[in-house]
Image 1 (cartoon, rainbow, N blue to C red):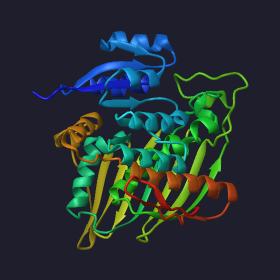
Image 2 (image 1 turned 45 degrees about the horizontal axis):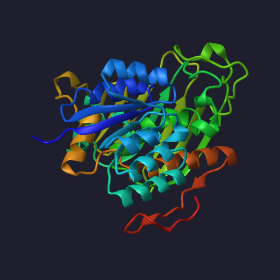
Image 3 (image 1 turned 135 degrees about the vertical axis):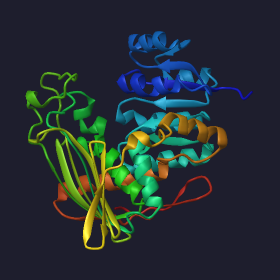
Length: 367
């Protein structure tokens, strides 16, 4: 019988508990060995809940003392890149929460270390692993939509600001507001459905209309009096892709809408898609009539969950979905969107990155 993969979680917050530890604890191929958080009491609570034998406040000590095969990184955004690199350098496979880093430059450093180490790294983009996404991707592979030439995507909340003064609302700690927080999910999903063509230009605008409005704070989040809020609460934009396709995006923590909306829409030469709040509607022109189909996703076999997928990739030595290279393309778009919003003009992405045997940058132009 194959030895179990020794697993540890870095971070002991809600995402570590409800997602990573909850899912990895269900996998027979995994043994949860350790947990680390600078808040020792938070780490101890989850250690007790999941019967984890070793508790740390220093992840570097944990990496040195435990012979780990796999770690999850569930920390604030500004810590992702450093911990990823340290874990890869220690010979450990990495499952990192989104966004992978604060910017594309940090992702390049992660890519270099990943290529040196030979280990696997997957970004936690869970929306790829739903039943609905699996069904849509199957339709794409069957050419239901034909050539997809335009997509719309968004995640808009009515009152969803994650507190004021916490790391979410401090740009140097988070990287930005809803564009980097929510946008990574549905920009990734739209690009995934479109086979991830490279972006060539971005035109974007950001707004901070409700930033300090206490009525717009998401339930369960607390604020710090006079805390920092220097990020956007809304980001909109338009992306041109190398294959001449386009994407229209809209992300907000707070907006005057009826209810929260999460969506991807696709326009293709043969069919169209409306995927809104988990509901799929398909459109196809037959003769002179446009037919609407609403598939029952309950009948679709359960999509392989994210954590199981990554474990199977490690065991079978396959590259995972939501790769670090795709994360780089995604972060280039996000960086350029912020740049465009600041300059109030379209920004072209002219970077052409190539990697040597160990991931060294051969050519790197600004974008």
